[in-house]
Amino acid sequence: MPIILWKRYQGIFSIILITLVYIILSYISYTKYGVKVVSDSPRYIEYAQELLSQPFYWHKHQSKYLGYVLFLMFLFKGGLSVKSVIIVQYIVTYLSIIIFYKSINIVLKSKSISLAFTILYLCNFEVIYWNSYILCESFYTAFIIFSLYAFLIYHYEDKKILLPIILFTIIIKPTGIAILLSFLLYVFLVKSNLSNNRKTMFFVILFILFVILSRIYLRSFNVISEYVRGEVVYAVSIYKSIIQQFPYLVIENKNIKIPPEHLLTFDRIILFIVENPIYWLKLFFRKLFFYILHIRPYWSNFHNINSLIVLLPCYALIIFRLIKVGVNRKDIVLIGLIFLNSLIVSCTIVDWDGRFFMPIYPIIILCTAEGYSILKENITVFIKERI
View 1: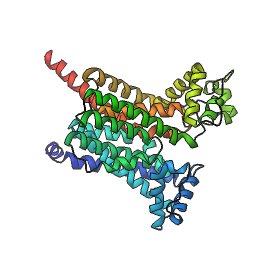
View 2: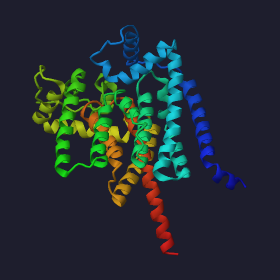
View 3: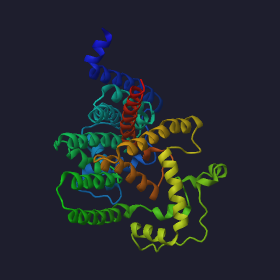
View 4: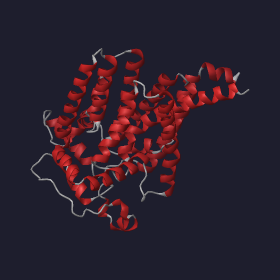
């Protein structure tokens, strides 16, 4: 009888279980972290407050996080406190977890696998505790999931009603450029009926758009100073004890050529790469290593080992999936987002606390779930053929 009930109401039971796990983890997180206003928090809060009095005020740097700032402004306009913002962030993330479960189920048509991988996603406590911070990462990650769902509905059912969510997600954080580019690429390659010549023309246009947006977005970022300091992780050179213990977190910058300061940041980056290719490649691949494995030598052994235990099998299953079924149409967005985010972070700044990794984590888990499903099918077929 319990098995029959489970099968009949599996979707409802799954959401109840996910909700219970989320409530327990959120209680632990909020009890431990409470409300965290850290060094980056005031710039979001101040810009949101400025927009309340000057609705058309445009900040040179903070406007690149406009989506999150508008979220704060909306809550402040309603008279909510910073503590209330944190509670709302926990609620938004909860909604995104439910949508994440539904997203996996759209792809795999398996409630049991969807439940298992949603719980796996939740078991990364970082998914929960970033809600306690006045930072855009938890809000942005939640909207990455909402956008993922909107895209999958569009991909499988050709429903466009939720696509505005993707447009909003793009303006939450500068890395939203990755969403814009990957989605545009998907629309023109999959949903349009362009000839090969026009597709080639579109690639050229998309590349030009990437260059234009990069020049605009990077204008207020001082990436070259990070290159010159040779920091693999942002601001790590400030902590002399860490550098003494882990000297490979800073690359020696002997004989490097520094581009003129009057150039735009994007132009300086290109010129820096051309003039210092070996030095830049060392920085790039070392940043990519720590970013994609989500480890830092100064974190606890438990944290680093946990990341490797989870992520290495994830990447193995994603590679297995790509080998077995190849790159399919939806991978233009899914794999594209992982690739572009990794590229952007490795070309600019790898954060010391790992929060830049969180927006691609749900996509990694979704692709892993698909890899697991294919592996399971292959094992089942293999066993049946030999019985």
